[in-house]
Image 1 (cartoon, rainbow, N blue to C red):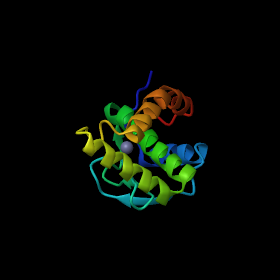
Image 2: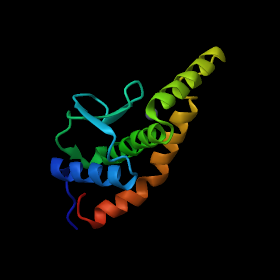
Image 3: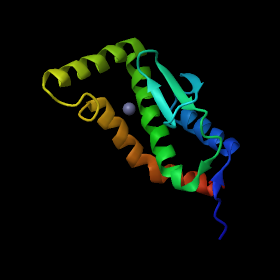
Image 4: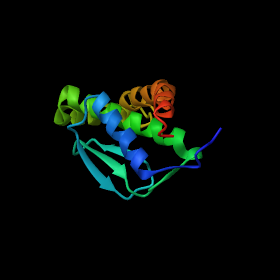
Length: 136
Ligand SMILES: [Zn+2]
């Protein structure tokens, strides 16, 4: 069996496009940015940021890549559901509430927990889909 050592930029872009369409956040504002994380949803601006740092992805980084994209897409889905300005307020309220309770504003944040669950739960399904499409 041939195992690809690297995932090309073309395949990476195709996977991201597929995911954005599938979760109906294809119209979310996307910004390309050189950053360490694969993706980040900017709650303040309602923008999904994608990293330009990795032209190709090593196979060993693939799981983290896919989970991160799914996690950030979940934030974009929340922003679409509530309207991004309202979601921004809800997110800030949650952070302030946690700080006032001496809890961690990210680790204990319900929006972060839901997004991470979503990434973990849907990872295998997409891994198999993309494998079948010979993208990975
Ligand atoms: Zn998050």
